[in-house]
Length: 223
Image (tube, rainbow, N blue to C red; front, top):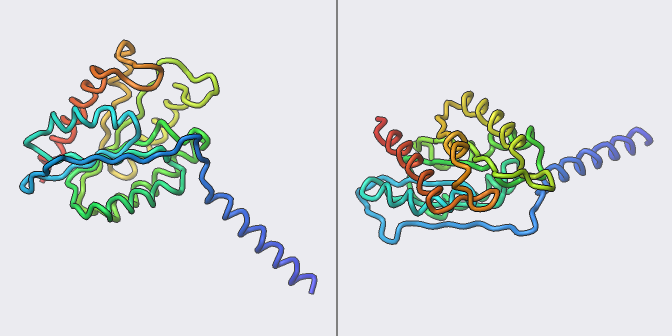
C-alpha cells in the first residue's frame, strides 16, 4: 500500500513539474500583430516576416523594396523563444492565412527575457518545427537579434545576453541548415540610428529593410 501511495505521489509530482514547465513567463503587455499586402499579386511569390516590434519597424520598407518581386506578409508577437505559446501562434497564423510562402525570414530575440539563454536556444527548435510543418517548401532565413544602445537597468535586454542568444542561435541554425541574415552586425555599426535603447529610427529600419530584402531576393533565386 505504501509503495502504491509513493508511486502516486511521484506521478503527481512529475505531472506538476511538467505542467509548470509548460507555463509561459508573460510580460506586462502581450501582443500579436499581423499585416499583409493591400492587394496581393497572385503571380508573385509570398514572403513572410516573423519577429517582434523591430520586425514591425522594417516591414513597410521591406515590402516596398520587394514591390514587384514578392507579396510580403508580417507576423509579429511578444511571445519569445522558449515560450510554449509561440509555436502554437505560428501554427494558428499559418493555418488561418492558408497561403504557401516561398521564403520565411524570422527572428525572435527581443522578448522572453524571463527565459534563460539555454531555454531561449532550446525553444528555437519548436519555432523551426512549426514553420517547417506548416510550410515544408519554404526557404527559412534566420535574422540575428539587433544590439541595444544601452543595457536595461533591470538586466533584461543587455548586449551580453543578446550576444549569447545570437551565439546559441547560430549553432542551432548551423545544425538545421538555415542561412542567416546578420542584422546584428549591420546595426552594431550604426548606433546613431537608434530610436531609444531598443528600436530604430525610420532611417535605421530602412537600412535593415534593404538587407532583409537583399537576403530574400537571393533566396527567391534558388531553384
